[in-house]
Amino acid sequence: MRVPSRLLLLPAVLAASALLTGCFASTEATGAGAGERLRVAMMQPPRSGLSPLSDDAFKLSRWSTAETLVSLNAAGDAEPALATGWKQSGRSWTFDLRKDVTFHDGTELTAEAVVRSLTEATGASPKPRILDGVELTVKEGDPGTVIVTTAEEDPLVPQRLSSPQLSILAAKAYGGKTVNPVGAGTGPFELTKVNGTSSAALDRYDDYWGGTAKASGIDVTFVPDGTARAAALRSGEADIVEAVPVSQAALLDKDLITEVPMPRTNTLYLNTERGAFKDPALRAAAREAIDAKSIVKGVYEGRADVAEGLLGPALPWAADLREPARGAKSADPAGKSITIGTFTDRAELPEVAAALQQQLQKAGFRVKLEVREYANIESDALAGAFDAFILSRATVLDSGDPAAYLYSDFASDGSFNIPQLADPAVDKALSKAGATPTGDARRRAVVDAEAAVLATDAAVPMLHERVIQGDAADVVGAAHDPRERELVTLDTHVK
Image 1: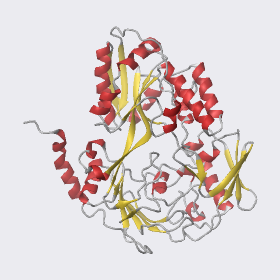
Image 2: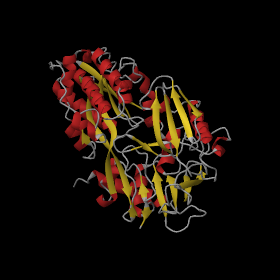
Image 3: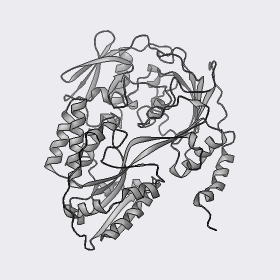
Image 4: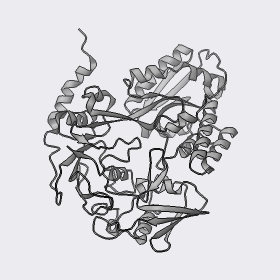
């Protein structure tokens, strides 16, 4: 009798569960007050000592310890946070600061503190990615205000300032060689202890400007192994588990799993500059040959969404504005040889490549696969070394706006132009989208730019990935954020 493949995973799961015993014991905390502490299993350990000037900033944001001047709502529009309002005058934006806000060390939020944090970010090396190509200066304005000025008029300044990498911290954070966020944020939880790459602890901050958190604190354990994270939820060792692997989700009680569409699209990029896919008719043939539904079912076990465009259900307004794209007519591949590249870092991508190989060969192409670690394949992909490349790509960057992604991937001078696309109509549409003020008009322009890209068949969107999060049955109010900026909030607690 054939043994189901998932059952073969059970020994590894049980072993992982055994190894985790004791790992999630509550970290010693001070001033916690009433309410249970939350035990959280995170996927990636800190890479830069939790400096907000690195990707570690998203951990600080997910723990509600560091805050920014601006936040984003579900539609990606800017909303007040540490700033209560703002107004634009040409290249300058004036932000009104929230009153009666204190940092976790007891010092007050002032314009001087905001200028210090943002100036540190603009001068960082490497610079926070939301500031790539942006010249930005900050100075104090009238009492309780700061003025942010850019070299060129930029409608996205408020959205840029929502990036967790632009968190505002107390002066004490900047006293050493690296930015140290311990005890320096403004959020409802104070970061009190960091144990290297193994764990961190946060206590409730009772003087938080936005109210009192329902949990007394957070105990974080970093668990890179996905099987071990899932085992921690199953065994009751963790209350909240981020990034549950697709292979593990089916082994867990379905009531403990939440799937949220994320702004990430698995796309086949086709080389428009050289090789078989220089011919638009062969690009169309590849598009017609791809059966995304079977990939979602077979590789992702149904835990993904079939793509209708580059922008998926995490940006619901896109579907409402989108019209069917029209590409070229297809031609017979007639045995044309192509090489498809992808990488191993995302476990599903080699499987996607194998499925595409079969589908395209059935359509008449001869297909070779080249699969490496991402660090060893990115430069070749960007140089156009492959006929096609499979990429899992975030479709909104830190601003929450997809125009920057579309420009970087499909503009003639885009920094991530894997398809080597140089199309005047696409460039015109992308420039218009980037220059349009935020709101409905910008969304319309973004969808028009998406349509211009899809009409070239330079990219074939296949599916949109989901955030799979595990919450214990007694956890209430955990955030399920497609942008992965929020996790534990004021209202998150164990009932």
